Length: 114
Image (cartoon, rainbow, N blue to C red; front, side, top):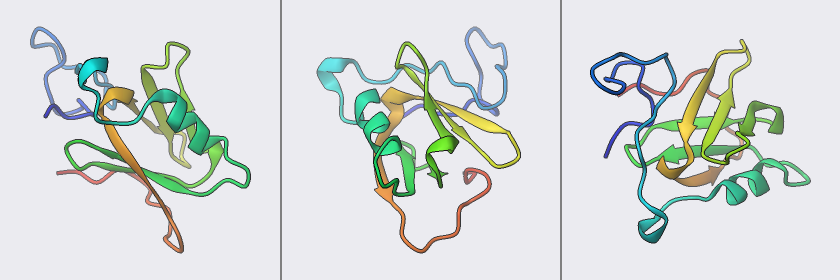
């Protein structure tokens, strides 16, 4: 499965893309196995908010410690996870397979590599 982050991958026609951006296409709606943008927004807007972790098909994990650390683009295709230093990762929503709610874990500063 393609990586949800392309900082070390090729980005269309052999041109390296901006760090943290992926234009990799996920499964079509007919074959969807992951989360929808509305499901992700529901988790991010929950009251009370519960910290969660986004998990991609290739096993990458992105912690969302507060609702301010997450947003969905207007077209509902891209999700952004913000880090405390204002760096961020942009993910294709189709590549997010599930979320895991966190309890008692310290927020991770950056996504794991590998």
